[in-house]
Image (cartoon, rainbow over all chains, first blue to last red; front, side, top):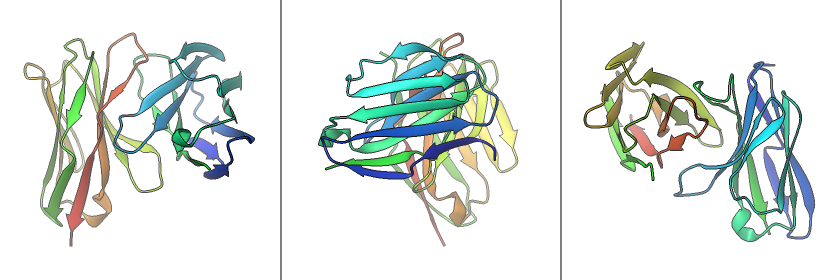
Amino acid sequence: ETGVTQTPRHLVMGMTNKKSLKCEQHLGHNAMYWYKQSAKKPLELMFVYSLEERVENNSVPSRFSPECPNSSHLFLHLHTLQPEDSALYLCASSQDLANSPLHFGNGTRLTVT
Amino acid sequence: GEDVEQSLFLSVREGDSSVINCTYTDSSSTYLYWYKQEPGAGLQLLTYIFSNMDMKQDQRLTVLLNKKDKHLSLRIADTQTGDSAIYFCAETTSGTYKYIFGTGTRLKVLA
């Protein structure tokens, strides 16, 4: 399998639930990212990891908690979310932290009820 | 702050050429990208251009960069129904990991 794989593709959760999004990249890249895509808004960068070290936490609420156990895997742990958190969450990777294009997964469509 | 702007919609007939335009504000932009997003999918990298280039061609795709006007365009020759998607322009500056994305242009190809 190649590229960037995200699971699950769809997730519906209540505001009191705890769930996790998973991302795996098979490209041998060193950097991984979480983006949020909401309707009619530009992509929002949430978190950036380089060689498993977090380098960016873009003012994201603490109800979103990232984890990067190794350079191939990235998780986004979710708890006590709000309805406005409903969006498409995209994982991406790049060869290096700068000067290389992003490669995206197909995203997880999250609905918070 | 930096900004990337695109028109929201473009409609073309199958077989015609499509031209999707993008303007950006960051004069230190080094790399400029075009991504395609089909329904239910993530963003697929189509092509990118380094800021010291004026043009890049890749099969049906031609990217033109006017650095003076901070204007980037993507031309799709012989547009097909499978090209219907949202196209995002993005820019980044050398040495940073912050990509600035436009809000996307929805291309509709009419049969």
